[in-house]
Image (cartoon, rainbow over all chains, first blue to last red; front, side, top):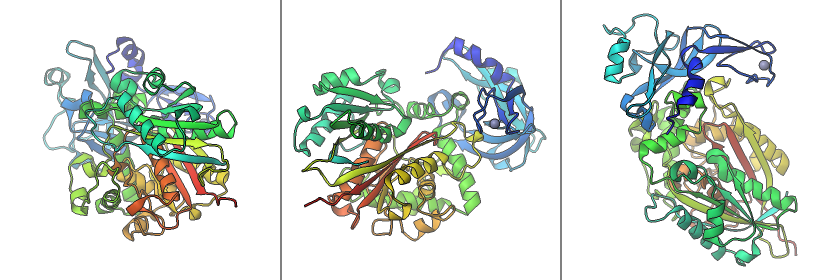
Length: 152
Length: 383
Ligand SMILES: [Zn+2]
């Protein structure tokens, strides 16, 4: 439904190197580049690289995904508060949902999000994984094995 | 505002394999005209309401189709507003009449989405969220799941409480011959159904299906129906949940409700019957509070005590709601308005709310990024 190379290209930078926008009026920080403050609507925004770590505030595990994500099911979407104060929602990987707790520290990793069709573009994006190895023995899989397995 | 509901109609929602979108439009139009004292020539304006024809059928405007299928030769408007479109379409029609532009308007909501695979329907629903959320595979269910988790933790609500909403709506639907699922459900069935996005379960969710609903609205006149639209409200919010301060409430609903109550000169306590947007069970719980019926955190008590059931002090979703009538995204808001009009004209049969004279319909788009609240009341016929 969304195989669109120019659109992926335009959005790629924010997907792999996320930025935050700080409103100089509200003194609140929001994920992504914002031209209008989500709170006050003003254009008083300063854009800077987003923090690469934060804490888990909440999460849900999706068992009934859109068709583009069917082979990844189930996967976790978390609400994460970055250290710069911005809150975002993003996939949490390398951990089972049963191991998640509120306040768990997570860090950003670039992972494959989606492959456009059979021979199409592979889109990457930022996901978050636990900063410390709270999980069993498992080591985060390497990029190479990811590409083969097609897992997140 | 005083805009009368002259007639209501529509088809029973469901997986309507044999009907295309043109068939659905014609069927709903024929049904509403059957209940109307007049014919298509008496209608000067058509307001079309749809959500997913572009995505599901590749038809990006229904106006040529309506012109062709219905033989309608008046003014045609098309309204868009996510899966709250129907609510906004009813409001647009009321505004056209109130402003004097139109005399009599046919509001026609239609959705033909059942030809998509289930996972494609999930993709379509996700498309109602922000583009970054779509990119990451977030879904409408996952957004409501995050709201449910926050709400449940904040107010001590359990899966059984959520299940009570679906159980109540199925009980109401069993009295509604137009409901997709007119059969009862038990708390166990709902609470133990398959997880779709934790903590939400399959039976917390409305089924996304085909359907069409219609209303005829007109200026008040000598022989008008006593059911009047008296107040409109709309509200909006940021598309990303992570940007919102409070996940236990929909700000768009609060904003729309306040505007509608003010416009109508009605307080929440005066509402006798409400059709609310229970796209997931948690959404009905939040609506009960955001519409001002119960204080924050108190909706659970209302639901546990049956105060929102038929026969309770404020019946919510007497039709069975989105959960049990089915949710045809572009048509649902029209169906909700039609249900309130039917209730206020005391013609709802077995599901009739006793002595209902003030009603409210509530339609939410996507994860609460937009909302339409409409208030109806019966106006005493002058002698
Ligand atoms: Zn600001």
